[in-house]
Image 1 (tube, one colour):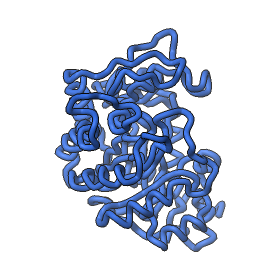
Image 2 (tube, helix red, strand yellow):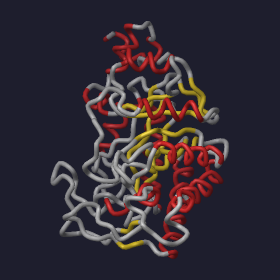
Image 3 (cartoon, one colour):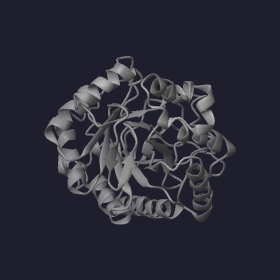
Image 4 (tube, one colour):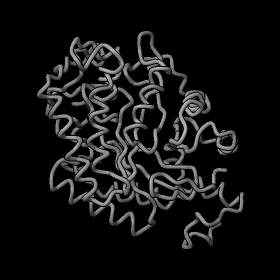
Length: 353
């Protein structure tokens, strides 16, 4: 089942594995560095059917670190357009860009320099749905006013237009992992009393407005996906029932796939990250209630026999996998060879298999 084709929008995927977006924190003034060419070049040749670029900031204040990929000016467009052309020359599979705004998780150190720690120099004032700290030792973000919210919507729209010009096959909107859109969705981080807070529909207002604007840009020729939180794994946080209702809204607005994730609104949660297929149970329940929408998930899916089984059982349609490709870019090819699926192996590499 892993090697069965899948159609998303007007794109045909040759198998059921996509490379997850993985931040590299290696951009130069927001543009791709040589590291991105090396890193992404190996991934598009890995046998995966689709590659999603790392979280890319839609504005300067929307960056996680000073070394994020960005897409909000002509220099960023030129750099990413060149990168997409290069990747397509290696393997013409769908290349998706994940657009994101960090919210109060921004102005941060690179993880391998100082993990989960705010910058003290070259920092900036972050923004969020409400004036609530990310963690105890982080500064307070600014609570977004209506003018700020209008600017956020504009920034996503502008970045999407630039993504289309750069030649990407689609856009994934980052709505999970504690970033800005998630901060609006979660009642833990959103304690507003206006039309953007309180009820589920109010908290969904900003995310749905972003989707509506981006769908007008992607239309039927580009994929529009969303990474969504199924649960905050915390009391008073997002629960599965609410997430299902939100995904129904996304489908109605024209989203082509959702990748089910969870956690991230707080650093410490009850999520067991070592469990195999840690979010498959969420995806299974969502898929039972929502038809005609590609349901994907991520998290500890590297056991391909297990993955094949959950695909056959129709718990999910697609798997997003990241770290196994970092450990061994040829990881999927080795499994393909054992199962007689040599078509995913580049001709130049066949002699090694």
